[in-house]
Length: 299
Ligand code: GRG
Figure 1 (cartoon, rainbow, N blue to C red):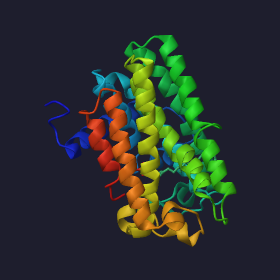
Figure 2 (figure 1 turned 180 degrees about the horizontal axis):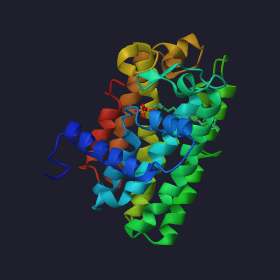
Figure 3 (figure 1 turned 135 degrees about the horizontal axis):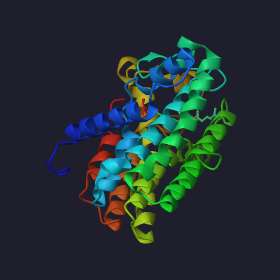
Figure 4 (figure 1 turned 45 degrees about the horizontal axis):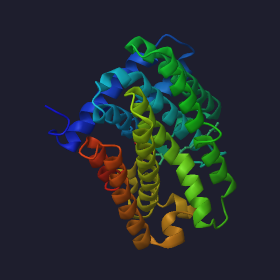
């Protein structure tokens, strides 16, 4: 069955299963102490959607590659993403008790082990990424991805966005400030996934630029939809407490421009994103369906 013919749900399930198996393979069990191991496994296998690694694999397929070869990069992204969720839930950050439908990591294992589980996943992500060499990718391509992941997850990327978010708490932000936070905190990891899939497919600069733009557009859309879900979603379905943005006095798209305008902005972003896909020459790939899924998902 080709990727185009399978339904989106089947496609997401198949790819999530591939990621699940890869995570087990690359995490391994050969480390101690046991509470650290349990805390790492608790969050990594707590039922995340795996949308970031799926985007990376789908990008490789869109550019005609055998996506399994990108599995080390896909798993590295999910490890890094899971670290960011564990740290985001800590009392010093968002102070959330629930994540992925379960008590958050520090509520089960305590703050010290939760911080270390996050640190461990962040570090292990780079060991996992380096395993691309075992898939036959040349060292210079792997080093390029190490640099890209450091850039998009680090101080110029996700961590920078998170810092701006923390510093902006309890203050009404301008739309520009909020967009900056969303672009970096959430968007940059999605941009990395698209760029990594494209780089591993050896695309030219023009296509890389177009696919990066697609990532920026769906990354912002992902977070705006997340803001909307926090207002209209149900705690049980979300797997975390609904209404927490308002309770924490956070600036969000709905709080700044209202629900209707937030939805309009979402549709605009997705149609622009599809134009970017066209410029990258992959408008008929699963990436187009994933863009639609991002703004219709319920959790
Ligand atoms: C503390 C050193 C240090 C760094 C902090 C915490 C952090 C770095 C960054 C936060 C990044 C963050 C939590 C962004 C929010 C992105 C978001 C919408 C997450 C939810 O992603 P989903 O919906 O969740 O893909 P699942 O559970 O499906 O994986």
